[in-house]
Length: 482
Image 1 (spheres, rainbow, N blue to C red):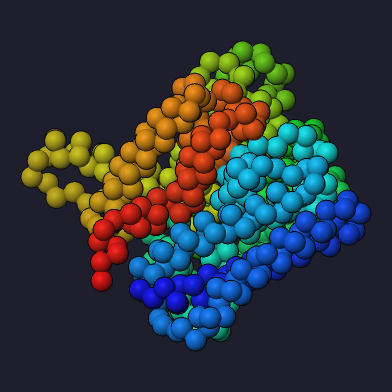
Image 2 (image 1 turned 120 degrees about the vertical axis):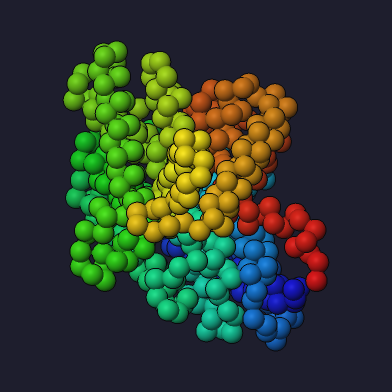
């Protein structure tokens, strides 16, 4: 492991990230909101820091190993979240405290969507745009974007790519070359974003809101340019556009790649993970709609509309809102919140534990039941027609064990700061699943959470975004041994 090589790569990535602060400058000048100087200062600090890391080490060249990839991915997301907070701390009357700025930055980049800000409608346009852009960049992962560019600068990318793409079956590549794979992912991502923006505009949004919401929709982030989120528009057409693109974005991007290459959508219905997600969402919408109808909270049509939107938004870990589901009757708030633990498909921009892991856990559970009935039988776990190697099955259980352990530890930590049980478990669950909305005292926003609790939640967001093991491996002695 070469410190100079790692500093060189981090410096390059930081200088690249500084370029993302240029669009908010243009937005500020366009709307005349007076925020352009804050972004100029943040851009300058970021690019100078990146140059100071890169220039002394620019000749340090070495092929990346898997261990280096883990370290760079974790360091870069950490450093990126910190530097991404700079504009939010420098915007005059709208400036946030360092803790709140870091929280908001990590929430955006990890596509969590939790916010400490109130009065979003009154924020300057440059800040509104910047928050949405953070989610778009984090959605597919800036590391994957870097993988498509850095090889031309002499930096290998496979180790980074394998730590960034979510899901337990992530070693397969769409194309033979890792650079081409990353480019293919970003072409699909950008195409979905533009299509989503045009659909929002056709449904009635102005161009600025359509751009911002297309960023956070395709990224399954949840940030909005309004306090009332999608509910601000009170438009069934806009809600349907949002639901459609959330559903598409929660699917594996490998399926989108096949759809583009084969000009067919048949494989969406043949893929076990995609089928499970479709049936899962359909069942949840049905249960929620019937519950709202029986309790007469809304008239029938509005109840179905709210049920469809909230289920898809929460289950895909987006967190957009058209109604306050936390006050819905009975077990509905808890049921909807728990669905976020499932999340999107592997290889999607969604959070949660991923559908494929849930399928594997269920199938392994059924295998153990069958073994009790037939002790001598050899029973394999299959996804579709493919047998799952025991190594992957063990990794899934390992992930689940680590997930539960970390959830419990961070839950105790947040409760120790003074939060009540409902607020603590829902905020930790929301952060770890990159969801955003929570229950209890954080149902409206996270601004009133204790400072220490916010830092614990920032760690939870990072763990959720990098799928736990990428971060945990850094804390093992074996990782640092030569």
